[in-house]
Structures are given as C-alpha cells and as structure tokens.
Length: 158
Image (cartoon, rainbow, N blue to C red; front, top):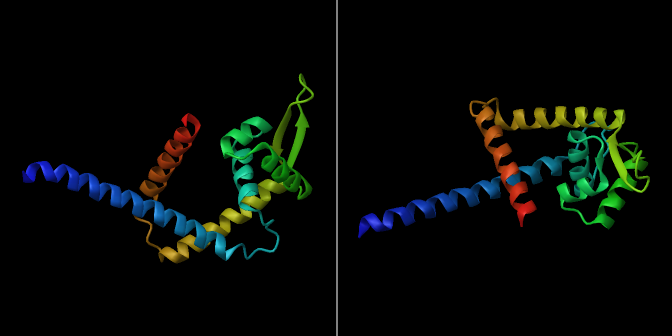
C-alpha cells in the first residue's frame, strides 16, 4: 500500500515546489518593480505599457492585433498603452502599406536606450541581491524561459 502512496506524495511535493516557484517569481518581480529605476532618464511604465514594450522590442513591426493577442490586453487597453508609449517617444505606429487601416508598431531609438538603461539597473540590483552567487544563473534563465513559453502557449490555446 505504501508503494501506491509514494507517487501521490511525489506529485504532491512537485505541486508544492511548482507553487513555491510561482510565488517566488511573483515576489521577485514585485521587488524589482518596487525599487523602480534610480536613473532619472529611464521612462517609467505601467505594467500594461511594460508588457507592450517587451513584445514590441522583440517583434518590431508587429500589428496592433498581434500585440494585443501576445500581451493578453483588450484592444481598448492596448490603444491606451500605445498612445501613452507614443507620447513618451517609445513607439512609432505606422499604417500598413497595403491596408491603411492596419497599424504596425515599432520601437524607437529612445525605447532602445530606455531598455538598455533599465536592464543595466536590473542586472546590478539582482547581482547585488545575490551577493555574487551566480552558479545556477544560466539554468535558471533557461527554466524561466521555458516556463514563459509554456504559459504563453497555454494562454493562446485556452
């Protein structure tokens, strides 16, 4: 009977570890965001604007529909975020050459500089918090990237 219990115990322990992982990721993200940027030149973004910028930075020229689908934002919320990002000089919207109603979104050089400054601060903050302990950094990044891809795929399917 004990053998039948072990798989459940293993599954339960794995579920606990997965829940702990999610809790830690959320807490780490909150702490990084809470500290903000020390560099006054960094443009502060809302959560929605940050999600849009992350996608546009890695997918320049994406259509507004693609950005909305990838970020999970409603069209009205996306429009608000894009207007704000455009007013801040971080994105440029261009009409499609074939269908003038379609819009493509591009990051600006200012966006690239903003991201460079922000990533430098993140790296400094995280490195200081880890006290130089980076032995598992590469594996952790690989794990979190796979987690992100799996969660995005599940959202798109569901």
